[in-house]
Image (cartoon, rainbow, N blue to C red; front, side, top):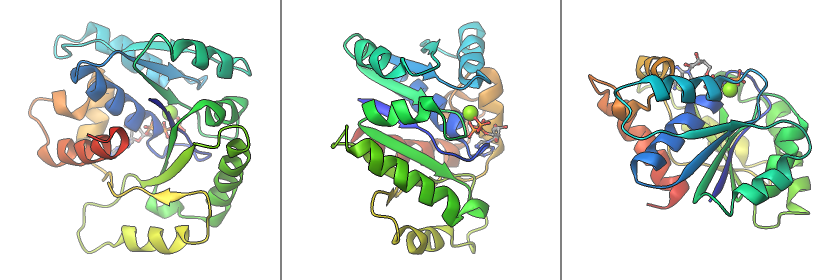
Length: 215
Ligand SMILES: Nc1ncnc2c1ncn2[C@@H]1O[C@H](COP(=O)(O)OP(=O)(O)OP(=O)(O)O)[C@@H](O)[C@H]1O
Ligand SMILES: [Mg+2]
């Protein structure tokens, strides 16, 4: 599976989702490669911390790739890894466009406060364009960093919003704003590996994982 976590907004949780999903895939015994296409290199730093962590039983291989050559590079690497998770930076970049052309699934995390038409409009167009070359591409918006307050109905607002976009679906899993994600990121871990374990974080990440990988 070639999975892209991307989007045009910064700070929505792309690297958080990419690293958690990659680590969970590795824990499941899969041969997974994380590709960091963001100059900030946060996914790469996460993988380095992971290599130094005693709490991480399986390493996640990570490479940084930039520029137009990404497409050919990913196609080549896809024959050597069972799964590829691409973390694309928060802007309309050549990397984001190249990744959309090779990915099977794209997940676009969006913070509830950022349910703005402009961002989704652009993503809808980018996915539409990429489908000309990659007809099997499917793209989902995933609500990320949502409030843990149960009275807030972000899912309903997002569903209404997405009805306008032909190329974007809404993921069923919702990722909420939880300290466990920030702590795990610093230590090169996924939320499953944190001690003490935040059960709610682990469950919602498992729900997303199951949706993405069909397990
Ligand atoms: N669900 C969450 N709960 C709490 N904190 C989160 C969550 N998701 C992300 N964060 C925190 O928010 C910040 C931005 O998250 P992250 O780096 O994953 O976003 P990003 O979309 O990759 O950003 P960029 O566009 O800069 O690459 C980080 O400090 C991260 O730990
Ligand atoms: Mg990032």
